Image (cartoon, rainbow, N blue to C red):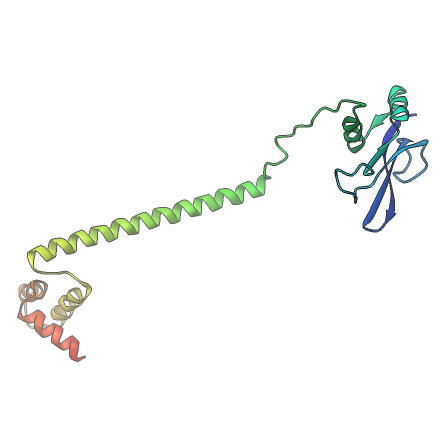
Length: 190
């Protein structure tokens, strides 16, 4: 017969109270036991002396005849100095599972992609800022409005005009010539 030192629950719903018992390991948790060797009241404060009461002599007797304590009872016995309990170590317990690991990897990839896109946007804005400062030095500024004006001037040119004439008009608009002034006036009116 295998004997276990374990807890047997009593008390009301949500108000647990345990007996520390020596019982046949094949019996139910709250079933018949051989001997009660103490009590455990988890509702009391951890430093309260009545939280765990243990008959040390009887606990030593049952350990001497081969009784195996449960993990919780082994903690009580270690605290009482009756039996040394080796600490458990399971480093894999806190590691996330496969699905959680996959979700973390996907999240990291999305974050990396967003960071790269942000850096590219910063680089592109830095390049456009550099271009605009170069154009300020030459006296002409390329903006969206001038780009639109160039496109309108090229499309508003007479159909009979040659490609060379259209290119010349586009250059005048880009340089801020008289055609550009007309295009900006037309845009202001419209």
